Length: 117
Length: 117
DNA sequence: GTCTCTTATTCCTTGACCGGAATATAACTG
DNA sequence: CAGTTATATTCCGGTCAAGGAATAAGAGAC
Image 1 (tube, each protein chain N blue to C red):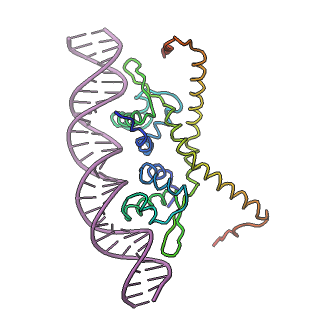
Image 2 (cartoon, chains in turn cyan, orange, brown, purple; image 1 turned 120 degrees about the horizontal axis):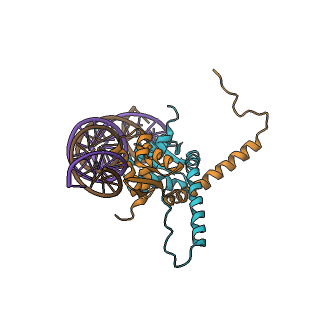
């Protein structure tokens, strides 16, 4: 049981149903029954998705009598954010260049011939 | 060839090899050959991964003689960032709570007496 | 204890994806 | 034109994930 949650984090979020569950839990913690109803999936299927999310560290469970209330765990979000950071820099840079080019180009100038490499 | 790239964005990044390719292209645009060599995959497999990334809108191709130079497209990064935003708020909130709790605890009051053995 | 409610797990089938080998396509070279 | 290089696509076998049905497990209520 090492720290292999990195790989499962992406695969966990790759499934649309699981992203829907995550979005549901963003509003508030919910017991499984509510999630089943909201997702339109069968209860076993939902439980399996919740298991994947749990093993990815994205959700935590709290036992409340017979019910199990799932809630988001904010930690993996930070992990995603960290992964995204370098690309966000690229994005900002390209926005910058776009702005500069729009600034520099004449309105009837079709395009800049890319300098050969 | 519709605009169904939203779903494929996550599935494209779910694969470790594709994330590796994306990381390679973050450094600089590269022709396929370089990516093949860096990934240790076969050329067809790499081409297929590049296709998935292309269809997800994550990379663009520029033809340079016989070579095809792939480069990151920064737009989907913004999409991911937008998706992440609400969760980042949750994360900040929980960091806030943690700070408050750390603030409340006395500095020489260890939360856990480190149960060694 | 039994019964009920809520959730988790197993079994099984279907469908998707990954990988490599072989092949096809495209662009340059002579 | 044939030949070579660089990349894309098809074909196929193996693996893995998803979904439902049935079943098990856990926690009250009686």
